[in-house]
Length: 315
Image (tube, rainbow, N blue to C red):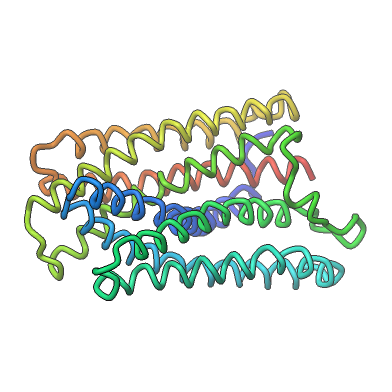
């Protein structure tokens, strides 16, 4: 199956979809990084770790608001794509999405805006952070439901309407655990890759000293270097499951080469994060921080393209 003119359409969709994926995964993983940094800072008396958590909580709030917009747009797209799904998707998603999304947003908002107000009660503030983190991790399962709903055939009026059982696969299905483990690793990987860029942007306004920025950049680059190889391993697990399901179709250039390019881009990003992590002065490697983020986006775009190509092959 060679590259066709339709692949250009898939690539044009993969680029914005992967951008949304990067920010949504960052939003789901950012509260976890913030809570871990604050916990470490309070346990060891580290001021720099708590300041890093403060930056992460603000970035998590902004990306959470972006996620709400993306989720709203996805619901509108799914509902308007076929009229027969209108009465089916709302009952499925509303009991899951609305309470979880509401608690997540409120916890993220309260966590970010209460650094000074809850200074005398650090346990309460830390509890808000962990509540937002747990809701973010729970949101990964809702994200899988969105992916499943988006995979409904284009001619869904002739197919069975989706149910909660089909949108959230049980642990016994072939793709459940590779997707779940992959998303659990991708969320903190994206968050720790996006956070250094945000920290650099905040430096002119939040002058917290060279030591803070050097330590924060090294810590965040190290987290990216920890989570991304693990995510690539989980993604390889998913590809192996797909190989068992689709066989030789995965060796076609339209699927194989984009996937290899995406993996190479992610590996190159890991190399740059290692440079930043081991640098004596990470501020001298700002260009590599931004370039690693772009490489991660490119890798996710390639993976998204392969996923869309496989989806249309399955249809």
